[in-house]
Image 1 (cartoon, rainbow, N blue to C red):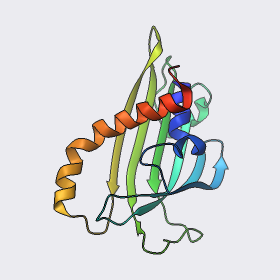
Image 2: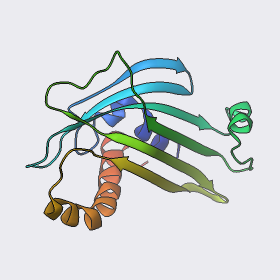
Image 3: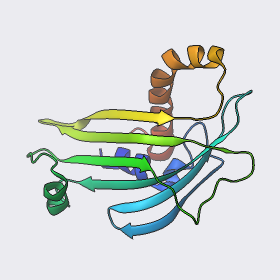
Image 4: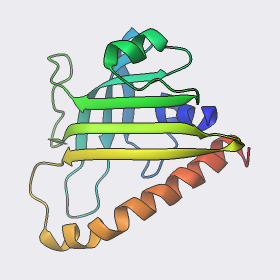
Length: 166
């Protein structure tokens, strides 16, 4: 579970995800739980690439009980990680060239232990994005049903590439 969270949060791990970001970096680290991230992601032809600027908040309920309380998150015995992100505008990170600035309205990940199962965890994700720009309908119709299963396969493959079968 700790490695999975690291894979989903650590910039060096994120550079290995598929599709591989063309650029990903931390713009500013505010605290151990808050940062601002930039990423440029390739899009399939005939779409234009997108970039995003996000404020991310991430925590572990066992290491950050005060932040859990401050954010109104639930208190439980089992360990869990939360990552929340949303798009922000920053004057130090304008849109580059022909990229289209996408918008993450809400991105929420929860990774939690399964009681009594040492090597098992539950991963939940809720995302609402506006890719903005023009997207052909045939691409939307084709991408929709395939995205979630493909993303889960790619997460598993990336995990195995970084951490092996641990």
